[in-house]
Image (cartoon, rainbow, N blue to C red; front, side):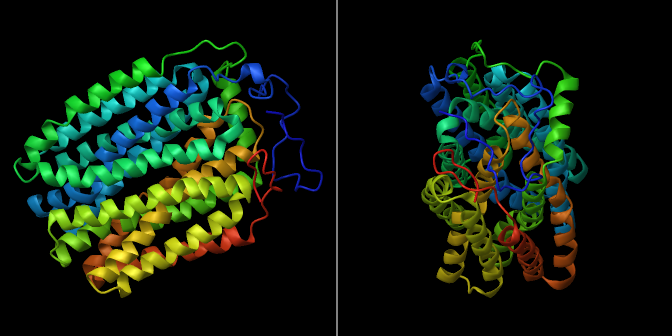
Length: 435
């Protein structure tokens, strides 16, 4: 794939040049021989499958297990929200660290993914034996570390292996997540019909370790000529400072940060609302979540292809706007089919958006060795939503659970307007670029 020239009429602050130091960002995919294409289909399949399993764990924790923890331990809604906050704090730190490791040691992505899956399994097994609120708070911190370590090395590896179809490859990574979200809740609900929560969580370690082993084998460390890693920590931080001076990237991060404030609230309280306030059964909640993720399975590759063909801006503006309307819809929808349709729309767009944000960011900067770091910056912007579940819990304790969704929907107005007003780099269908 040929390197596209910098657009002549683009905002000079929109895309970093980083030309002063030719060794700071080696153009890894400018040379076709430097692109590690051998065995990329098998590696990609392993990453997508592992991503699905990881999300099966994570979705079951958020959708089914956490409401059961709240009920079992007799927590208030603010205490319930603080569990998500604890996990979110760990999520941010481990995401940023794995972004550094993913670029510093880019040839060892498989090892990092295996560690991620192993830590996820260990954390989930500990959830099953945590006896009280304070212990659970510490365990939820650990539960935020394993899953968040996955994305930077995984997406960085896909970006390096598929520079010619980056948007679509990253959307397939997202489809794996949607499949995991679909399967996770129903499988857990089925197991909980004949196992206690503690028995199920304790037994969750073995499958995670098995997947870790498979990833280690199918995504081996590679020594591809020309596919160099960042040589030192000093060089890495030089790359990072260059990225942080990129206005377009910073605006994308700001938009995703605002979205994360809303998402932290809605993810934590939607299933609690169905389980605690509407008295839906575990199986009904699982079906709602599963069908919402099925909608995402279909929408995400379409959004990825559209972003490659017509640009990421219209896709992001439309998706964020519809996600906003779906959150407000939770307040206005009657229990039953109306709420089901609202959850369906939310599932089709909310989770998919982050992968389009990542593709837009990767396509807007020089194609060097910063794929994992850019991914970490987009995911790491979720630090803005760290306190959101706790704040929403306080609001909900005082004004009722619908106030949490009004809060979450109102926040989404801001990124929708920001994306609509942003100047995106000119779109090149061949390169999957921006506007």
